[in-house]
Amino acid sequence: MYKGLFILYLVCFGTYLLFTRQPDYFDGEKVPATIFMVKDSATSKLISVATFSNGYQNFSVKADYYLRSWKSGEKTEVIYETEHPEKGAIYSFWGYWIGLGELIASIVFIVVSYQIAVSITKNPTPEALIEQLDYKEPNKPRYD
Image (cartoon, rainbow, N blue to C red; front, side, top):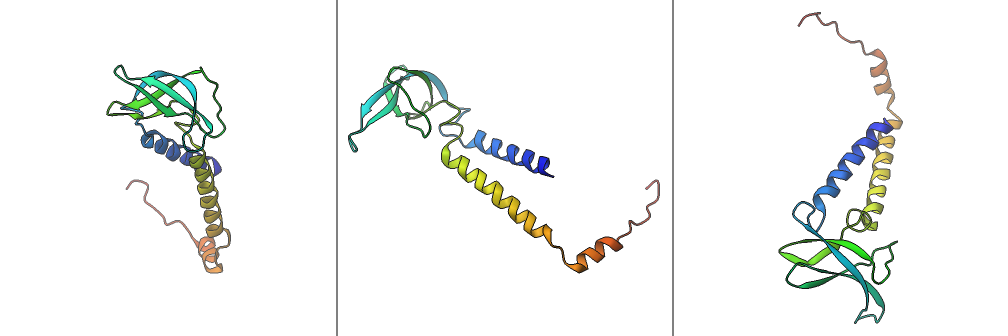
């Protein structure tokens, strides 16, 4: 039962990830980018941005992700949609494919779903137990 539940979870979560990425994985273009440290005007802190070009203009996208640090001058890859290159994203497993919020929500969802399933099937009523014990499979003809 655990293997089936885990496989179903992986298939559903993988399908969700594949079709909900922004910018879109299937329509997006991947280009090389360089990481630079710039001062944020609102907080006056240094933040990392990835600068890339679509052939006509240069664009910058935020590169700050939880549990991910960059050094100035590092090379990476950016994915963007041609209609909105300013809405690009760093193309990496952590950040583009999986984010911290999605990971936590996914784990909470699977744990809560499992607990609900266990609580529903854990203590059947006496009538249901008697019905299961008294059940006899009806005779079926060999060739139907």
